[in-house]
Image (cartoon, rainbow, N blue to C red; front, side, top):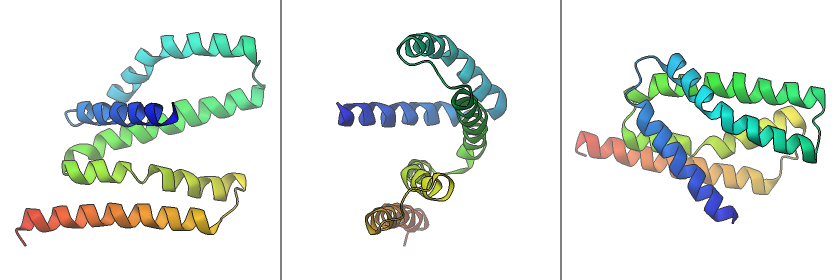
Length: 141
């Protein structure tokens, strides 16, 4: 189930990014995307509140990280996306797990393990190889 959900998430992000390549107003487009998701989010929140009522601080953190930080991040992504070659854009997206892991170490005290460092380094090295190979192909080297 986890693999299926990750594949669905990856495909969804690919569609989202594909739509964003033509964005002329990244902030407005991102706000519109968030508004279109709001009905589903409200239904899921209502169901979740019945199962586990939220802590007010947790709810504030969720809004801050979900709506504000992610919204601004998506708007920036839509703004830079048209300037990136497709392979570079697709590869850069794959850095998100390493960035999230680094944020967890810095902001919430997750352990910095050799496994985390090696996995992140391997991920970033693979992404760099893809981007560099794409650059060489574009230049005809």
